[in-house]
Image (cartoon, rainbow, N blue to C red; front, side, top):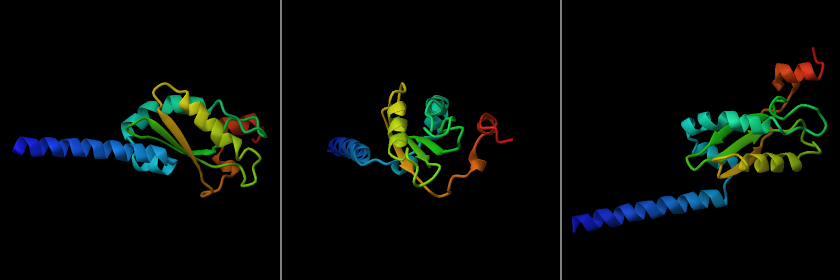
Length: 142
């Protein structure tokens, strides 16, 4: 009888975990991914994620969004879902609709990535100090 109780409990735990994963993916935000962050997976996948983000450009500035300092944080959860917290150069940025979609689409194309979500944040606000030295040099800001 004890074996059956343990088996039922294990099956229940597995199905509960699967349901929680499905629910988290259905209404996932980058914030939910940050709560479930897997530090080892995040560290392992970060170089390819940064490489992908470095191919996305703000349409008004000839520098990629990573070098511009628009990407604040990256996380990958145990299911290889990527979350990105980023900002825009200004709340009225014309790329407000297109950049997050482009980020999600690029990240979903990476090997091993099962899904991707972007949260746009305004705190802290973006300023030129967030730009990399390479971006400042490219824009002649020295």
